[in-house]
Length: 426
Image (tube, rainbow, N blue to C red; front, side, top):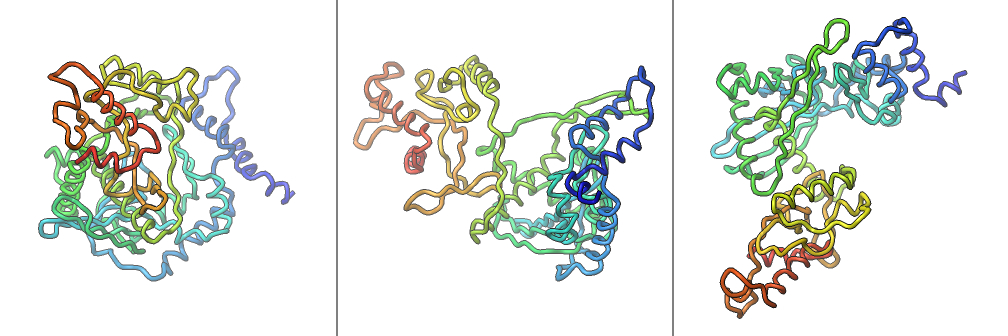
């Protein structure tokens, strides 16, 4: 019996879920919450954790808290968390202070590794689940409650084990140095996005103990936004949020837009990710990079159609595009482009953990990104008159214009080097 249970992970959870399900008449419609619970059980194959895993998690939390190893004590540092109002756990926190014309920020991440030993049953179960699964009104965590909502949740007023990134920033929020270490912290305030937006709008006052760190973090996030304004693409989006009554039925839904509070946390987390990636790259430490799924060809075709309707030049797309082909433009441009949007390789000043450092033969490592770039008319070749590149006046193409278009097409090819892109930027 024990061998069969081990061979089918999740069987106990499925059985317990069926046993706990309330009986319902055949013609009775399930509530929205019941439907979501059933969907989770169907998709994941389990709900909850075995009693042995719950006990192991409680013991691991007690051991880690009493013997957390060598750590830097940051409990006196003013710290706050920002999460959705409905969040049940808080896995990151922020501290910040102004220093002369610059600033220093501390990003604290809950130290899960201090509680889960490699190869332990907890580790095996976490690997099987891979991540926590969130649905409206419910969550199936990757780790038992004693860890996910307690020991590894940076709740206010209690000491927690964390991994901290301490980043020194210059006047324009450019990183000057970064250090990473294990720490012990204590959050002073738990804020949600609505509260933070009210504080930024002047409709509410921040908690006194985090007023200064919050103002410093806001200034850093604003400077980071200005710094990235010309190199990043901000996509405004909104997520739906549902309201349930006591019986589990949906009573309403509303859009949750991305606000300044969301952007503050997002920009600080991106900054931290970049500094971690640069550190790993310098040390040549193998790391996991997130790779997004290939885009749906139908969506790529619709995007190209919409861009063409707006007069934005687009490369042609072949018939019956595969997902791989849809992710990279091919061929020559759909129309002449004396000025327009094209895809080029642009060097990045900082690495991100969302992209790999690209190696080139007989060249130092270069960090590159396929990015949208607004191109100026092609530059004339050395020794040629400025007007020769684009023909006389505003009309006419001629051979020179053809050569300029050819140079732009070379930039579109995946094998185009950085020298060409840099030459165009001079």
